[in-house]
Length: 138
Image (cartoon, rainbow, N blue to C red; front, side):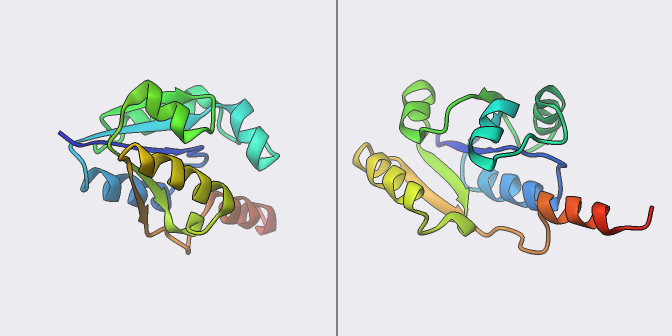
């Protein structure tokens, strides 16, 4: 059995989120999704999510291709692996070559964890949705 893991804030859940989750599930037997807490999201995005954590994790839990959604309070992928023991980690290819991800790649590869970069959906993002709302004449 191949256990897969991916993470995200999943704020204003959109087709890009769904595409990543579906693609990840197609490549593993069991998909665990780490949903970032509001505090963790603020640490690296410098802004709080629009949708509160409890609602975001419930949305992710309700997606049919997700086997388990868990609270995510740290960003360190190696520490997450120690706790969960996943075989493969999925990330959007917009992170490919990122300095922080290169560090995690090196560490995870030494323990046999595969990193698979999945196509992200460039036409959609939470930021674009928010910008669209701000620019609309509601």
